[in-house]
Length: 295
Image (cartoon, helix red, strand yellow):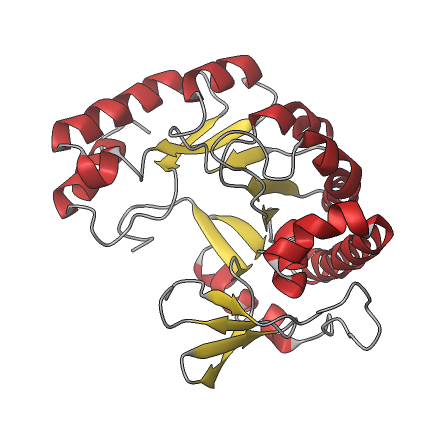
């Protein structure tokens, strides 16, 4: 599929975590989290609590030398020499926290156990930094690190900016600084309305922000405001236009985005995964338009 659409990116690592099948429609990731794949078959739903109490006593982080973390990297790089190579770290901070503690506990912990939250987030970031360092030192062909970590709701951050700044931002800056120290680009994926922290992300050295969801973000305003400071990646609606619009709607939105991004700081793509109920003619419409552009 990537070859068919002339995708310029190739992603290594895993955007949804490194998992093994344990039977009964379950998978377990390297952090010990069990994922029930019965209903949600893409990523799954977390089952149980790996860290049921606000203490890390008895919990061990994964081995940074786990072969799953680096499996197939050399082969993929060799087969994609003309692509922009990214190593993906999914569930890179807040998402990793709540998968270990549970979503409800995660939000309560901010208020009730702030020291524990900061300690666990620091250890999560330490693990990521160690993996990134290994990747960058062993595979110099890697161009950038792609961090996945959803913070946004439909209107603003799930935890609010004040909490985000106190708990998440310090560790994000550490991870991003490590990536920069290796001379790599850093791209982030964070769903929802994260507009209020874009200046902080730019200050931390983020080069690209995805998915640039038009359902919750004013893509025209943001691109014009931050052009030259950060690159937006996404923009074509996968919640409205692609699944429910006409072919002409898809073409119109695609052409608007291409016109909007002609002066730079923009990479076109659908704003998120294109779901299976999307009409094939709508998918073909934007692919044909993109491939018809002058190089």
